[in-house]
Each structure stands twice: as structure tokens, then as C-alpha cells.
Image (cartoon, one colour):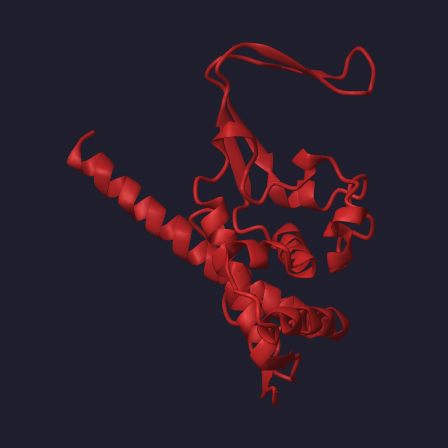
Length: 215
């Protein structure tokens, strides 16, 4: 690997690991500000761990089902990447369910682009796709195809830092909601104005009313 290639990889890891996580946290807090009921449910869940005597470790955070549901729903509505790309390793014919003429020939070397935003708002997989409904990602409610939700890609070549990014976002959201109440205010853009840059969708700013909680 050349010096130029190594520098390119380092820059890629920095961009992919910083902007994506901070963007997701911003959108999550915004959506919870719009849905006070969801924010209250998450606050109650946060109390169950912060006000207990259990250790707050990786496994404890992973057991917080509503926190995970809020994050997954945020990533559905505001995926950090506009699209995923894959390079075909062999010739293949992709068939649909529209009859014998419903197929696409893909040839070795072709670049396939998956529009994640469109996929995440497919009503066939997500009822009321424009609405923020964390409950759809609770274990007992999940009905969508596993490849209908691809904020980190899928298969063996999904995001290498998926677990780290999710844990960073979960901790930031959990601590924020436990310590502060967030509300929409007159200066809040609904939805937030966004910048499209380097394949990412980044909010210009998220202005909210913030109130310190008293424990």
C-alpha cells in the first residue's frame, strides 16, 4: 500500500467515524424532541440503569431495548449515507416478482448502487414510513426483512465499526435524555435543514429548547 493510499484510508475512517455518529445523535435528539411520549419512555428506561446499583457496561446498555429501538428508527429515517455501492464479483440475473420479464442482468465488474433512503421508506416493510415509531424496532414487533434496514450495509462487508458507532451513539443519547429534557422551539427547523456532502446527509443545525432535569 502506498503512502497516498494509507492517507486516503485514514481520512476515510475519520470522516466515516466522526460525522456519521454525531449526525445520528443530533437527529435522534431532534426526533425525541418531536415525540415527547417516546422521550419519556426512554427517560424511564434510562432511570432503570442509572438509578440502580448494577454496573453500566456493554451488556447492560445492550439490554436497553427502547434505547436500541429509538436509535434504529432514527437510522431508518435519517441514514447517514445516501446510498451503498457494491461491485459484482460474477455475472448474475436478479429476478423480481413481476413475471418472466421482471429481471435485471448484472455483469461482473458492474457497480450496484442501493438507495438507502428509498429502501428505508418502503411501506411494504415499514407502515407509516414517514413517522417516527421506535416501537417498530422492539424485538416483539420486528416484521421487516433484515435487508430492508441498511444503515450500516449488510452481509460480511458491512460497516467495520458498526458496534463501536452504535455504542457511542447509545451512550450519548442515554446520558443526554437522562440529564436533560429536549423540546421543539420557535427556532427549530422541521425537518432540520441538511447539507449533502461526501455522500453523507448532515444537519446544518438542530436548535432545541433544553431543560436540566432534577433527579
